[in-house]
Length: 196
Image (cartoon, rainbow, N blue to C red):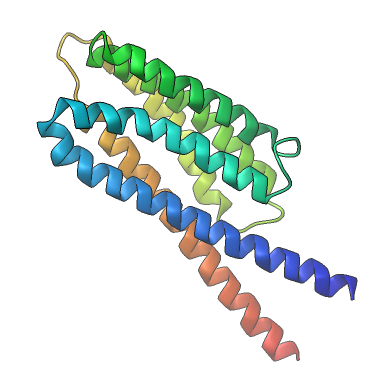
């Protein structure tokens, strides 16, 4: 009886994570498309997109942590919510300066959020599939952040396109994790049906 409850909880977690990763991938794909089309033509739309990206990350982490026991048992996500919220405000201030400042803020955020995502993925290794992609994503995010900070020091003004590539890789990793969970669930079902 208890084993059945554990299996149901595990299946529910896998379903939630799959949906969560798909939503994160979809948001990033839409963000990249809008950024590279309308965002390159309109400074005001680019500004909204640049603020929305970390704000979405904060909201998504909040919902995911809430679905998985709350903020107290998900400290990396709790900290990520705080960091992403502060970054959304910092982007508003940086936009008043120039895009070099914005890229620098995104660089610092990519480092912190990447390391926090890495921590979340490591914590979930034992309970959820597809975490190797999240580990790679978190590590790559931190590296990209350092690259953004270096780019922000250059005289050539960056644009939203510099950040779009970063968001595109994020979409790829979230999609890979969702697909991995789908395949692993399908395999588990087959094994369970054979055993019955």
